[in-house]
Length: 365
Ligand code: AOF
Ligand code: ZN
Image 1 (spheres, helix red, strand yellow):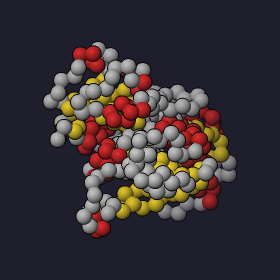
Image 2: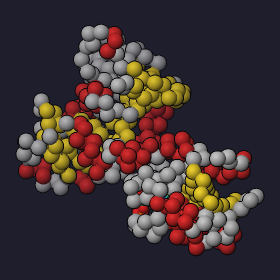
Image 3: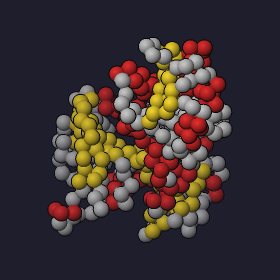
Image 4: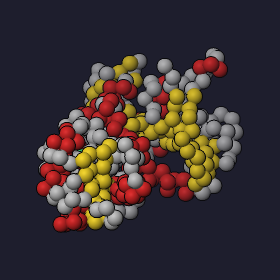
């Protein structure tokens, strides 16, 4: 299938619009839509919030009567089901759209090709795959949850040039620059959930919220706390309805903790530790698309060893911390260099004085 320069231009614009929903659409995907006739864009829209209008509806509203006979460029397959809102396909047909170009099919089993089939049946020309990689990257967590029943897991760490996250005495404030710490807030804000461990909660008493102006939602806070040890007055529990504690189902939840109203999630455990695969499946069942892990070396190492990590977000500061401090991942000493974990670098950028690396583990077979 060949797409014109104008097609590319319109889809690039639709992707740009989709990004406006990055901090607000959870658990829905980010979607953008452009309605154009042969030479001009007539309507633009994006999905802003779950329960609100889908991108197509917003764009059709702006296009008005000019939609008749026009092309709709959508970053995701238009839906053909009644969810919180009516099907977009019907609205596109009613407006007289004659061609639909979509970046990617919607992996949601309620949609998955059905939107496209319905459009075709009604005589609309449908073309798929324009800028598909960009569209999938934008909704990487949504695709992973729909396809695999697991969230996208991103581990964030601030390290020194000598690979440490703290001094031997535990001091770590601050290794990365203020600019890096602000950048972390953006990644937190787009995440469905932040995962940390009880060790970090006891040591640092963090709030793990997203501190950005104008946010309409906060990520869920998940605490891996196998023995239900969390103090009820921890900062991370200050809004109990936005926290989930994952503990060993073989140990009963302390009454004081249960009475806070926080969601205590009993899970299978091995060697006294909550099993991380079932934890991730449970989070996906709660419609968590992206999880950002901000935790100590133990939990991060266990996630990596379980092959649950999809992405590393590393802020490397040009400082040296000397011997004795931990690294970001603990999984025991290796016996052979052949056992090393390989990572592929996705991106490197300078943030303030630091270097920000995004990497993905290459788990092999
Ligand atoms: C579209 N356009 O802009 C979006 C779509 O409950 P609802 O009504 O909000 O529907 C949510 C589902 O609709 C979501 O899981 C995904 O399959 C699709 N999202 N579809 O045609 C949009 N955001
Ligand atoms: Zn829709």
